Image 1 (cartoon, rainbow, N blue to C red):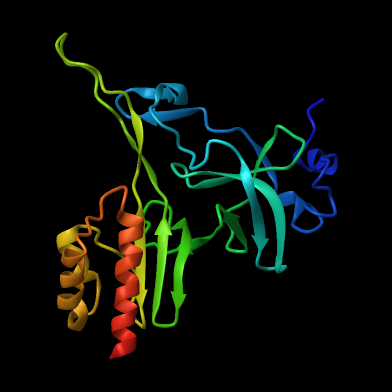
Image 2 (image 1 turned 90 degrees about the vertical axis):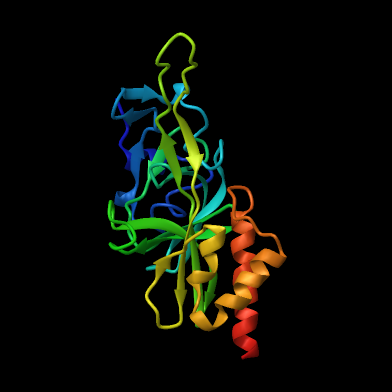
Length: 241
């Protein structure tokens, strides 16, 4: 007999009913399977084993917390984040089951030392209307959010015997969202030549000089550190005004 998600939680050793289901809403837990396939328009359903890379930020479950803003509680759990599907998977100690919680603003996650929450904005996220983001800077004059996004490169089949097929692969694609004072939130331009344009006109010349003096590149490996470095410089400019 297959146990319901609710009964599975009841028998979990380590994180028991009083810690998980009583603390949160037990009916919100849903038993799910890990992603096994991706769909590529030109090729149909492809096994994940045939895709280079992984949709998960961490290979294994890591220590984290579910944060219930409504009840103001934090529940220790094991977490994995699928950055392709934008979905958190929850593992309760002692089981091989994977669970998920509904995409509600009340549920946030502490994962790899960062707090993830749902940012709702239909202009930024036209496909779903919301995404999980990290809060990197949270000040009255400036807020910076980061979305860890893994996009799927469909690859390319060899067109003749001289070519080599390129397998589909997951590619990391960071997105950053900036809100300055009373301005609307916007996605940041990450091209080096355009980056200073993310800021108010009076600061752009100094920020551009800073970027070129520091030889910042905003490439895949350095973009996270480069963005934070410039944002800290910008805040220093604002304070010194």
